[in-house]
Length: 232
Image (cartoon, rainbow, N blue to C red; front, side, top):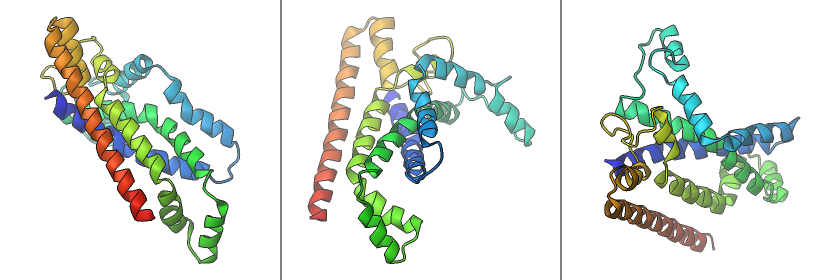
């Protein structure tokens, strides 16, 4: 259950997060006014503590007085009990993770974009490529190593996810909801070791997390090498 929840929350958080980060970095790569201000604003969620961000979002996703349910009612939809549902709770936690890490990844992409030679864009523009085609055929291929790096780092972070699901319920329990609907591997390890005092099971969970991370990093490394050979 914990492994499945970790997988689904990781996918729900990582895929939109990296896509939005790539789009934001592409926009900031152009000459805009107050670019330094926008970069600082994008990094502010990352500088916010996990506890503060999670508690605020828990209030926003509240069943009775949450702002999100109020907005849903305003457009004629029913309120959602975000915490009790499996998909709703996992989506809510994924939103918190996405909000916190999108700006950080966007700045990494932006730094990589600024190292792309301008001659490539000039050549593409002379050939009649629009900005969208330049983004697809110049920017994305040049960012493959950086994208692979962010995928690996984000995947590792998803496997280790702990603070957001721990504080989402507001009571500090490690069960991950009434039926474990959003309990992650990190929560399970903490519950086994420090709540139930089953140190052996907690250690086993930790080793399982370590092996999962090794497999993911190994797969991404193989993919990176195959792409590098194909580019040659």
